[in-house]
Amino acid sequence: DSSPDAAGGTDAATNTADPASAPAPDTSVAERPATATDTILLEGLPEAVPLRLIRSPGGFPLPFTAYVPTAMDPEFSTEGDGATLDIVAEFGGRRNDDAFLHLYVFPEGTSRQAAEAAALAYRAGRGIPVSRGLEPLAAPRDRTSMPWALDAYRFRYQSGGQWLVGRMGVGHRSERYFLLVRHYPEEYAEGFAPRADLVLQSWLWSDGSTLGGRPASRSR
Image (tube, rainbow, N blue to C red; front, side, top):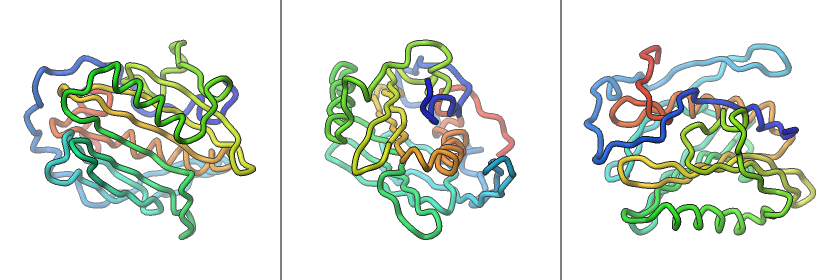
């Protein structure tokens, strides 16, 4: 896999088993600091990244918290019985709508088959060609960045004179399916990918478990 996103791992947990009902809230999640700082490597040199804590709004079907770099803009919205989070890059104060993390929580009662079909429809809506732009993540090494996913795909395609890369996966939690997409221009790989990793590494569901469903460390 030659795309920059191929080795972009975040959550090392591998757990797609979900409880039959919504987990009880973990009080430690409520105590997370409002701001934090982490470090990424840019051109081989460490760079401090200021982070701010985001919390899903009341009524969000899968409550969570996560740390987002201050150079990225998080936007929550609702769509009928579903809910959406988009985190868009604003590096240097310039917004790039092609560089984003996208979460969509499907309406209650959505089947796995319907969720997977909707994920492929999302791909088609973005103009990602299925023949050469979308490949299933089958080998274990491919699944490092989305170990929680029931189905996951990587993509690399050309649009508007630039190459766009990323991954998308369908997950399941508390009887709800969700779609998570990492999408960015190939030239953004060094700056966007590690920042996206910081978001996903810091992701905690309301019961204190990570995106992959395992208990989180209490380092942050």
